Image 1: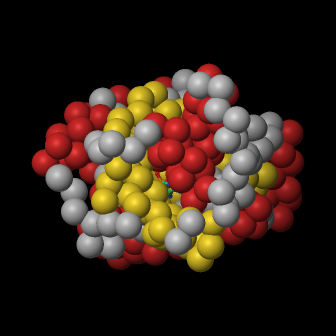
Image 2: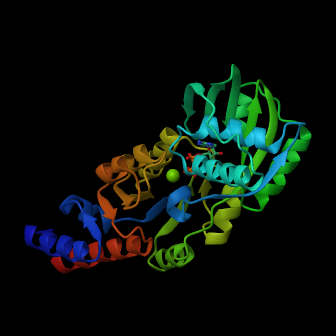
Length: 300
Ligand code: ADP
Ligand code: MG
């Protein structure tokens, strides 16, 4: 594109809340055949809430909440916020005066599986089944059944283990953004296929993808795995756009031909992206690609 055409297009984009970082981004966007969407915070609202709690042992629900809160308090993950918020509510509801925060030592983030910490000398793990299995924590048939049921309702199970025993779970629901389905079908009508990528488990991911009308899913992928999926598609000659919020998807935003960051996402995402969707509205994925197509068409 000529510098003038780029200037006009980026100006037009900016006026609609779409920040296009230069001519290269614009040129690549018009060739996009595949859009990969991150699930959490991109296709979904990203404000997951706990819809159910479950205890598998004799531990009290308040104890479970206190331990989970102490472990999650240092995490940036939206699931951590959901667990903490729910725990706070329960503590208030049951009039617990014990709402002080327990001290967590050796806090560790396990990307795309959860967190761990040492609380009162006990090793606490908060996360998914993969975190439990990689830490040699057994998942009983009862727990398998519970997570199976929740996952097929498109819920994510956050399990809490203390010293090698899973005591309970938070079932979390994160609704789709209202425009998500519309955007996927509009892209489809433009000849662009949509793929969902997520660190979440296969069952939950598939249930959500079905809801939004996406039939290709990559689940249980860590941040590096998400970028690898993009490189696999590029190796087949496809021009790939990646839409993400920067939580566990920054490497993918960088790897994509066109990285599109949700404006409400992390600073790293906004930095790494070629396009920033300031309004955090997925419709702008369509608008951005459409703008690039029209700009490039005019030049030829
Ligand atoms: P997504 O790709 O959907 O944004 P992530 O890669 O961030 O998902 O996380 C994948 C999975 O890892 C989550 O669905 C959850 O099971 C687990 N997980 C990650 N971080 C946490 C956390 N802080 N607390 C509990 N579970 C977590
Ligand atoms: Mg994410």
